[in-house]
Length: 112
Figure (cartoon, rainbow, N blue to C red):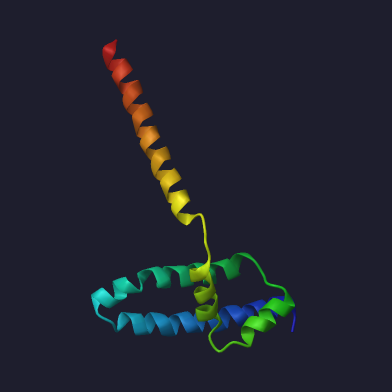
């Protein structure tokens, strides 16, 4: 199998796994769906990452050995420390500062 075929095979396996998870999720109560919303979104992002970057032959083969590679990757993802919350805080501060600048400019124009 070529590298492209290995990665396509892995994507298809993980996509099928996500569809099964999605169907299960849709059969749950709204409260339960909300409890799993983060997991669903992160699993979608994991799938999306496969569309933008290929794994090596060995990496793809290793993940293909798993009966549930998407769930495995998500479990490992949950354990990682990321800068996600810092990025959100920085974005919030940046947006607030932009509004403050706009308000300042608007007030200076009104003073004239």
